[in-house]
Length: 100
Image 1 (tube, rainbow, N blue to C red):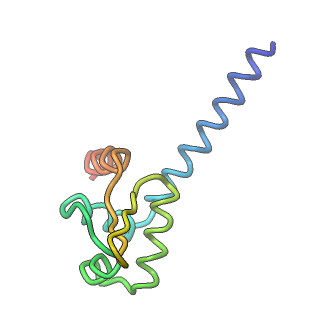
Image 2 (cartoon, rainbow, N blue to C red):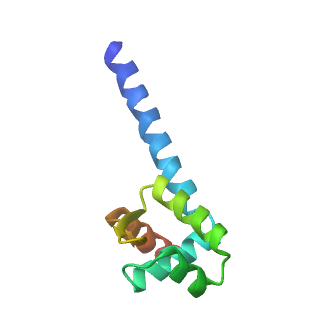
């Protein structure tokens, strides 16, 4: 009985983790950012904002959500922060391309 509860609890934890990832890319602008970073490996918030024509503040919020979902890595380079895809994000892009 205890083993069964443990399995159910682990399934719940896994489901919540997956939900966080899916919510991370469940927005057309965030998908656009992922696709952009798939083509150009590292970009700053300003570069992403210019390329996507999204306001800087909004771009920053999208990047924050992508980071929380484990889809974006941040690397500090002087005063600038560079953003890159995680391996998980590359899998997400592959999945999204299969759906399109």
